[in-house]
Length: 310
Image (tube, rainbow, N blue to C red):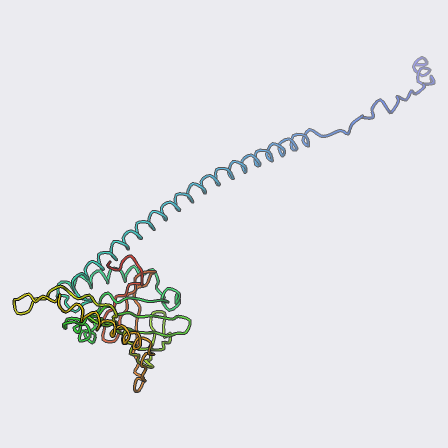
């Protein structure tokens, strides 16, 4: 016991280890933190890659679908234009021999109505009064069912008289309409027209108020060709001996023609300024279909259009 007691009382020196031996040169990072960070980095990387792929695939699919849609739309548009052109040509061809509708048979009128109905269903200008630039210009009457014009058209069946042209000229800036009829004979040509104002009443309808009439100055032909012979009552008559006399008369006629042609047209007021309305049911750059009072139809072709017969 004494030995043990002595041993316990022996002085013991404590030795401190240098603290730098346990001081880490780099901060200690817990394994969980390292693992979590690694996963986060990996997940972030995966997300970036996935997003890039999604963008590429999405863009590729979008571009592909968009191109296909554009191609289909263009194809449908081309087919529609071709169908419209076909219908317009068929309509104009159906006018042949009808003298603007005067001589049209009931079968021909029914065929014309069918073509007009199909074109009206495909009208590319649903609001014509909002497209006044298309209405503007000179339009040649190709066909009408308006019986009020038939007496005028029948004048062309009289000897030596011909209705050369019936037209409607629209000035969309001044809101004016001029309806004109041109007559021709063996020695002169002249025209009769009416001037009117119009007001827009709906996307398709205009109200027309007639203001004045105009009788154009006759344009007398100052150069006539005398035939060598004419047939009268079954016999041919030689006109050669009359050639000298005819030449002297023609010189006088030429002077008279120049004097008359230089005169201004005759204008007159239209009593009570009658009004009418016009509904445009089809309109494009070269064809116009309008309906007037009583359901009558008018088909106009733009001046210089290829649809006009040669």
